[in-house]
Length: 85
Image (cartoon, helix red, strand yellow):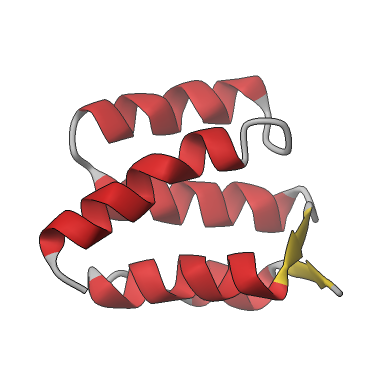
């Protein structure tokens, strides 16, 4: 996954999860997106989803993990996600 693919996929995350995360978290990750902070965006999103035990699909979990791994970011929040189905 190259930097353009990372940017494209990470930029899709705020709207993809907008209805499942707190408004404050959404605002934070939208700011991170605007600043090109894709690793922090993905980490913050995964941590919020895990903290609130928000249901995610296995596909969404795998997408978040792949992005974090591609950016050499910690994947610890992924292990705490509430994967459904």
